[in-house]
Image 1 (cartoon, rainbow over the protein chains, first blue to last red):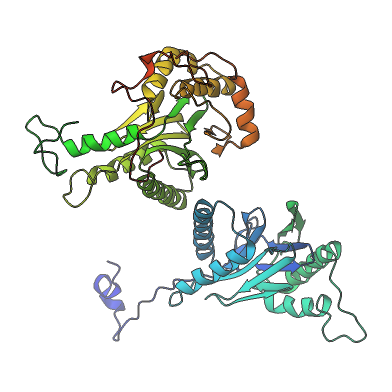
Image 2: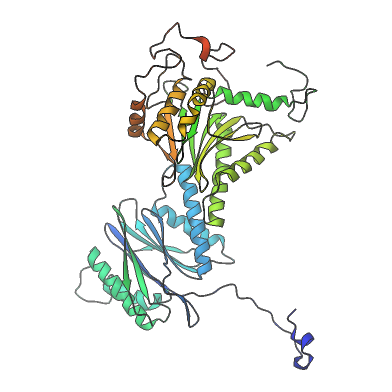
Length: 232
Length: 276
């Protein structure tokens, strides 16, 4: 095999060698999702990277699971692919058994259990699920790699998540501001905010950039928009 | 069917070289209500006659979707059909997961055949008492397959199974060469006519007791809803039945369409099947 000490005795050194294989890779990417009264929007950038190199500038990170549910997933791309495929297979099984497609809250719970299933060798994926709940209101569910699930009105995840979440807290949640009334955010404002937020992310986070795809989920279905970002 | 000393176990051969238990299982398929499958150059179509156990209950579902490109129609023990359909669904899902492509129909049929064969060779199992008509579309085109409790499967251009299905097969054989060039509407009309020939006199095709499924190149498997059923049924409305009987009952109907045993009414069985 590739033994240095056997083939090149002059290079042999004393001591034990630790062989290591790192099962995870961080392929970067950011996701932002906002829920409104009758819509949900979710956007994710399209850059796939490793270290300081870029794999591709055109990788969609949003997965349309059904007519009313979208999953944004970043982190380790191999885990993302496997997780989304498994999710799609489980959702089709549900459709066969129950003769209807899975509601977003049902998918949210199932994803949580699927992630916890791999509690001791986790999917290294940052998930955000967006859709409409049973009453037609927008809902956003965010996850940690082992399945902690939380419903909220807005969430940023992925490599620039820590930079973007405070910005969303201020602009949507109206936190740390005086003399403001919390009001539901209209769709156009949410879209404009989403784009601004990603522009900021691309400025500071090297793993976020190139372009973003935005999916807008309403009772009429899902619309798609593409928006260009800095390429550096 | 006569009882003999070689038919108590599926693992016992008769001196004539037959497995009687397997043959008895094939009889179960003939107890289920009729179903017809046929295809043209692009589409594969399944048409099934549903039966209701009583006026109070719903009509038993005959067509089960397996995947976007495969559907089956069952005849015989519904419970056995459910097990098989669950197996077929998981195989298709696993294939999609692993290969990112729909499962080729022939390969699925081979897996089903292998699974059914196991039950014909173990002392602690019994053959599955259900026959399937499988309609599917893959990159080789449309397919119609028939499976039997004997674990045999056949690639067909058209087929009918179930009670009084010989009349339907006769119709299909007569018009076989026209199917390949039919359009979809004509194809379904042929299927409905074939199915109608299996009906007892008092019964006619209506949107409640007929089930139609279509699969094709850009068409995922769809089981037709009431509106579509009405449209298709209107294509064959008012036509003379080959057997000469009318929906209101005609005492002098010819015996040519009857089962050789002379059984006029649907067979009564104790085990839950898609019969009464």
